[in-house]
Length: 207
Image (cartoon, rainbow, N blue to C red; front, side, top):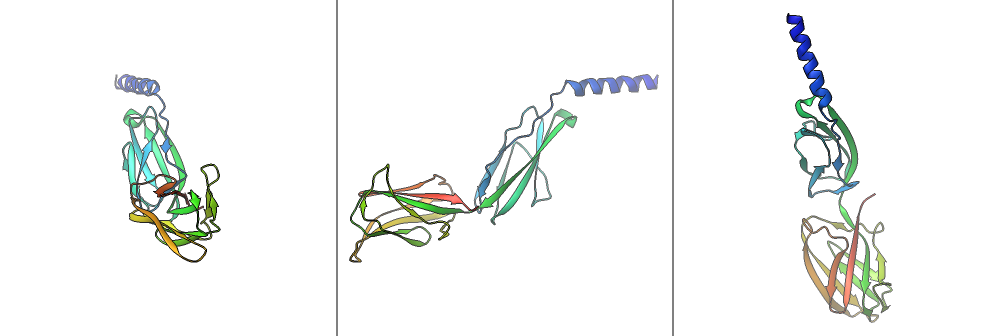
């Protein structure tokens, strides 16, 4: 009689397990995330009851539909997400590689009718854009390459972006500035509109 009861329980468990859908583990994350900034990583998993997350730099697992992290250095990382069906009878696992990197100014676009021989851009550090004489348009803006010759790091904090024009005789004209909170401002490019000019700072993550 006892054997019959145990057999019945096993049949019920097998039948219950076979009725459950196989969960699918899926992670929403880009190839690179911003170092030094508070980030949120979410799941795109399906047919699951609960999720666990484990990072390569942290031995403790986290539970939930999303995790929040800050990576303080530029490095390569991985995260393993496990999706479990109800009661844990079925599961699926995925490991995703990504990197943490600061944002760096990649190149500068400037549009406007220019009487200047170069521009000075201040954004955490100063850099000069030379050979700037001419008239620029949206379709053919003036472009000054910054990275990788200069690593101008955009830190996640409030900072001012300034644009100054320099004439061929050396005289300077301050054209405009704007403060951005780079903790929350993630637009690419960073756009500064001044009197007669539009400057776009395009940024990138380090390779």
